[in-house]
Length: 413
Length: 65
Image (cartoon, rainbow over all chains, first blue to last red; front, side):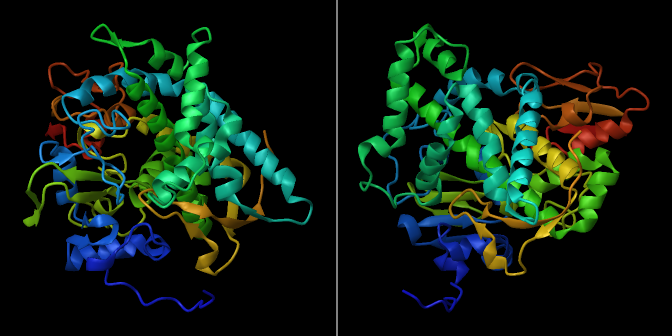
């Protein structure tokens, strides 16, 4: 097809498809429109899916593990069945009571104290990436795709290091993620077995079991016990898959969206440079305004959302970024307020599935923005044409191509 | 000023001990611990206490003037 004329906008209340480029490009406007006209929308896409957009409804579902199961968290025509309560990627796909132990195992490694110890390495990693991309520009170049040259690499390095996987495998991780999250179902049955995450992890785990134990997260999962029993292979495999999938393009998206914002808002760039104390508030506002992650549930029983009847086994999306822009929950909800003092944003979800990696994600986003602004305090979008910025499709939203023009740099200290 | 933490609601978002480190700490799993054990906010920490309450996504912290 070579017809480049834009297709007519779908009726978002009944025809949304969150894996389409049309939805990805304007998702915040879709949520705002729906919140006013049809706050619990339904589409036949992907076998049928509900889309609540009010903070109140999204919070109620996230807190209600009795009526909404996490057996499936990525909306897909292939709906997981018979995997509860562990699910295929514990603990994110686990329901109570299994969930609590599976999560508790991992909490200390992702707790605030453990994560704080990674700051120095993360900063060094950002500085190295900036040095490289500035060196690659050449004497007259001033345009760089910061989504690809900067944002995407930061979380890969950190999580590979925590797990004990080679960081050179970052490209493979991103390919797995693209298939699983951005285009769920599309690659099913079309891949050579050795190109899959299943093969990659099985091979790696087999090797690790034959090697002396190592002090990393994979080593921990291979040796730990719950109630005197080692974890099952399915549990270990699912958790490692989760940590690879969930920790990378989410944070990549948040870093990219924050830089996209700063490229268009010189007043916010200046504020960050002049008033470093605003950074922690700015980071939370980036997370509120550009929250990347929409989760999903499967109705465990016939139930309702905001008075709207939902049938057992229906898919339900939890668009946390939509909740974050609900004027019922936030003052000036549709405005980016860099020093917002009251910010109960739900970028990391709510309830028992609160993002396990939230401390890590905050650290990475903080360090990535801080180090970038120290070296590149002024930059703008490379083009006025919004189509030059490509937003990811699916349940994790962020810029995947983000060409910016560097206007001024500072020397490395 | 009085402050309370509902530990049943806390999910370890970690906003309180980041914004009010003199009033809250975290346990090893990241859940919040209220340091003002008697529930009284020490003088001069009212602003930090309000900030902690206003940024808890789970509405687990309440302050009363």
